Length: 326
Ligand code: ADE
Image (cartoon, rainbow, N blue to C red; front, side):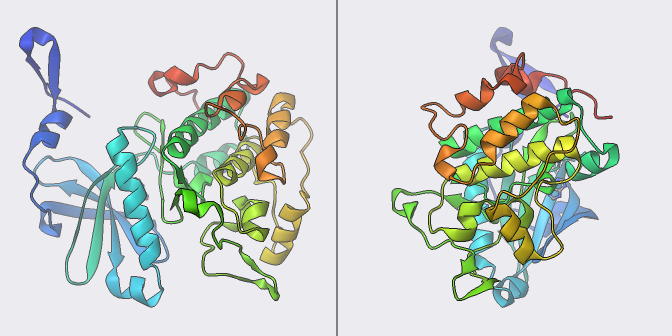
């Protein structure tokens, strides 16, 4: 992507095109700064377009939200959460997340200019091959674990982690996206009314639930506590899905699905990798405080050192060639 490298100080420092763009004076962008192309994603209140910056020729993913729709669907909070989390993550310099370059608005719409993940999301890859081999599962779940370490160190919970939200860049490395359900934890958030099931009507959700049912943790269904451990539950579901081809908890009705989650009612198909099974069993634990990793002084050393990850160097994953998916 970065073509021009300008050497300064006798080569001790290099100015890449990226750095030069970052040094340019910041003036508020507007839609005319981009050529909008095809739709690459659609949400309940937003459409994501592939777009080209006319000044830099760079491709971006631009999320466009209709203001009227946001107000009508009461999604203002979701949009704010997404912007806040993406801003923190973009400033943190991690490559494991979609970067937010800038935001702007016109009278009808809000625009989020983000990095474009050329290879789309992880779900079609899992569905196409039916099942990832151990090397692929180890690599991609390892990158997701690194993303969670970074996220949780910044006190951010994703709360809607699933294969559709794991995007793949031009090098097939992950970029976690979609922070509309995220929560920036503050000390006072230890008890926060986040219960999904209304005690008087178990089929109802409270407004606070915005995640995806299949990956939702039992504590988000029943308790008022929120903790980063809910993302570890989702990680367990994703590791299971990479190997089995389908998520562990499935049902036609959401109510039955919730019951299965609360009863830990799922099975492993024959031939499921034994080390992966042990790891998933240690993540899909009903008590959020008992999941592997939750007692780590340094995140998430006990997951990194699980036998499933034997031989994987977590610190160099981002500069390692990903194993091919087939
Ligand atoms: N779909 C939604 N956001 C995207 C992004 N940043 N890159 C590619 N596809 C996307």
